[in-house]
Length: 196
Image 1 (cartoon, rainbow, N blue to C red):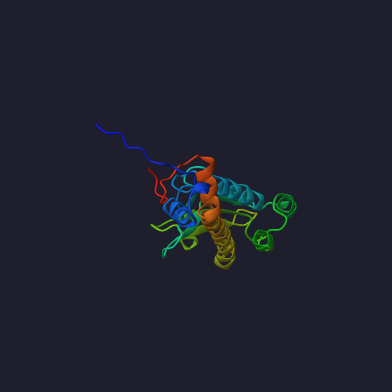
Image 2 (cartoon, rainbow, N blue to C red):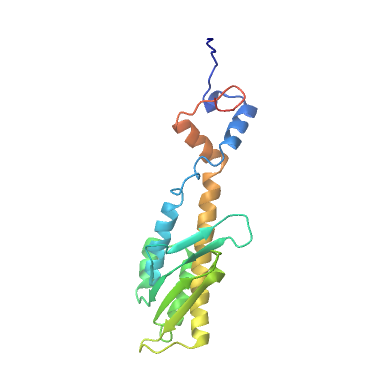
């Protein structure tokens, strides 16, 4: 039997080259589980609700990403026009022009599409997989053109979600975030930046 001793270093103690190698080899540290996107999805559900959407709890949101054809986000749920959407959005996310634009589209349709059901079908997750059934305030089927306008707004909301997810993913994989996570978790490295 022999005993081998090795020097271990924190990220701050490594040379610049070894530090870069340590960060690169641990690039997915913050996103290697299903929890990295929980805040973004919760925020999306809250914003969707402000606009009148109730996103299904079970399998209500689907996404894939972030570098392949067919990547994107979609959601399933119900919609009912919410007259106070503008004040609710202004309080929750006052600087979000994209959400206001979606709300204005829905508001312009309010007398023609009052309720709807949104679904997403297919093997892909992007907004193009979404479909909608729409009804007027009297419970009649909305026209095909009005339902298409509503669906375009719902798809815009799904595309906005995808952008938020991608931004969060990229941020969590940034050098700064990876380094902070490695340091706060006390991860140690060999002199060349590899983990022991």
